[in-house]
Length: 244
Image 1 (tube, rainbow, N blue to C red):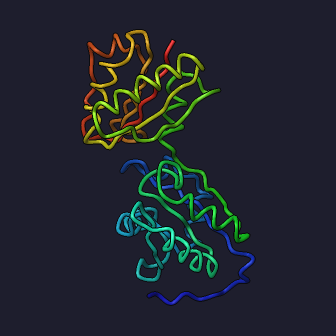
Image 2: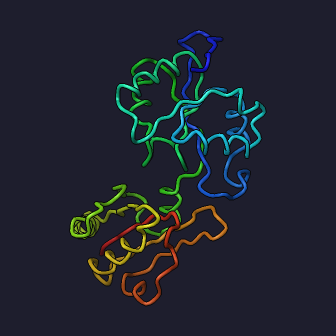
């Protein structure tokens, strides 16, 4: 295990929620200068994937050699006991929390550790960065006053279709935008189910490769989508529904 030096008083500890790029686009297009400076000051990181994070820190020009930085992993396989042990890590050093893409703790691991930080009087500081969920909502033209993020829908076809019908009904009754996602290799399966289950008048936004060179964001009715499906297979995407 890496040696961790305790250079500051424990009560001054900060857990920074560090944004990750959504695509291979130039980082200076999506990260503010002050955010990058904050990342440069960090030497300790809790991350969803160490290899991805090392590549990211190198890309943004972190001044320290990668070998001089300290990493711990937190992903969907991390147990609550292991997360509790990570608390010792952030008690000793200012630490950055990163997910695989976008901002940590939103549709990604990390919220349990953030709660532990609050419970132990460790300051939590979110750094500004790209969130595919909110960027898709911003660009959708759908209701931004009332919305709900469901995350991943059920993997089984019948359960997924039932969920889609329930989301459409809720959206119609409450005038609420419903936001959800799928693993990229199952995008088309989800899209076909949306077109099968939802009413022709329901509006659907498909937002794919956000901030990437092939960024695609479009809102139209289910009826119009049926005649012109986008190429989104294996591309990270966010879907938004609004019934009427």
